[in-house]
Length: 336
Image (cartoon, rainbow, N blue to C red):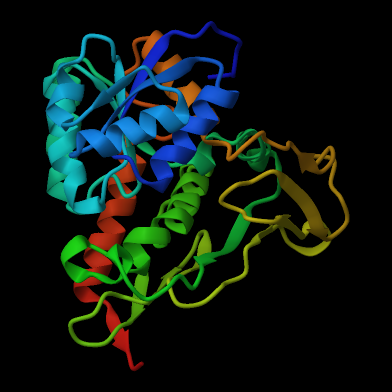
């Protein structure tokens, strides 16, 4: 599906009034082309009204049920904490709303299976908000990859060191590195395998965690045909670039996704003689935080009556959720 101009048509509501919700609202309303955020919902009317006043929204709801019942909202962006995703997705689907849910979509594979079945039954679109897959630079890279000699390795990580408090460090809230940031490199790997028709195996997983704590660092290693070393951390900064390599001999090549690879805006030739299949570096800057691209893609899918996204398919969300859920249950824990 190629991007195209289209009028503002999709009316968004947001469930959850935190930082990620503010970024989504700003990006869609300032830079989006295919929809507009009109409504915010929180458990507290005052918090919802403060958000609405700050962002210039006409509708503020003091409950998620009120948002679900609103006839002025077509689609809902679910931006609450991980353990609350499944219940809210179900509420919105049963109310006839299309749903874009922040990553990770859910934290139990059985919940995703039930929710995707419900969405199909209701004729609604359910999509995980994996924004990296919708950035123009990533779409261009995915278009070019099949023309290059075989991709055989990927290195990517996402890590930072926030204060050791709050939901990220709470096992009861499904905190930890794998769920919070590990899904990003796993999605990158899954998308490359899907695009190139390569089998994606099961990863070897190792975690750094103490008894009773969340995983502070997670490492996922995949064997061939596409080998990958993928990392995630909530206690240290990790390399923000991602590296792809492939080919053999004179056709060996290496690319780098520069800057924050999960907000991809530049992909450059790093090693090897430039090949004819690589017409030049990809440099496609975005405005704002770039979340408008996933919102616009979602709106186009809705307008075309699609029940699944070709860019962020439910099957790949399922694959990534399965890797994390199984990995957390069976991984080798490293000493702290």
